[in-house]
Length: 374
Image (cartoon, rainbow, N blue to C red; front, side, top):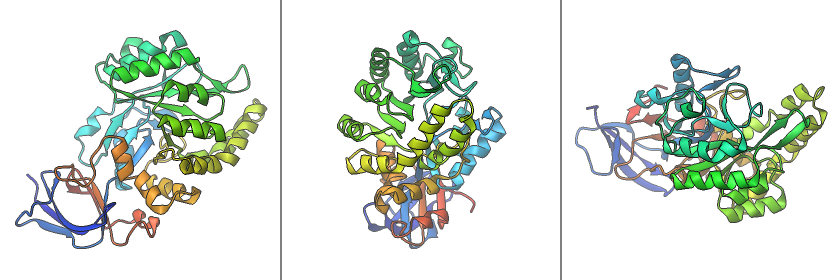
């Protein structure tokens, strides 16, 4: 049993000044005699959320070394991201659940894509007739090893990650991966198994079928035109725009321009319109959440940069903070600062809604009831 801790501050988002105690890794509002006071003022925030992160991907592809995986997880937690939706990973990261300094993980399993239509050695590569069965196995715990993967069988995933579009080298441009009927069946199978479906999608063409199929989150969503924004808002699906990663689009375009000029021009155009389209989605009532797309081209530990980017794009400061904290936790089915909840929180010395940059230097980060080193 660890020493009980005591925190006093303004609890967000309800703006109540209260005392809370931390006992055996959980929160209570019942006084605990002898608790050590670790903050006697400030603003208390539910732990930040990176809802699109890849622990298990690095600049050169898949990562399987446990020490490197742990370093990625530590970087996210040290930045305040105490809850991560790992939106597609080729690695077995279950050992991190037992590490005191690793964020809590919600896993999607491997990406699901068609052959040669995603990053090499990263996805389960299948054809459309297999999609519904593979999605069901990922959602229910049948396991990717049954279809050629290398992560363990038997783990049910609360989310499944589809690749909705990617460059088709034969066409020289980005095109959808899945026909509408395969998508509808696959999403239905996932929902029947109790899982939700997240979809990577950059361009415009794949979005109508994805929205109509009932997917639960659009990742990136740079192809959201005005009519598609309205359809997405009506569907109730969320948008995780990964703004700091979208700024890689011009470099992606230049690296592809000599061989795929049409694709390069599309990536430049999507980058140019991305922030206006995301702002339009927010104004239309689409739920928007914070995700960095860490792994690959984005370093781990940049959750605050993404919250700042959401605000700069047009979300009010409180909405941007909620998108990376309490609102994202609600969306992912995780508790906030309530009786009995896991003790995952940040304490800031100033109101972060007045200056989101304060999130870069919190007074305290508490994960699993323990103070993380500063």
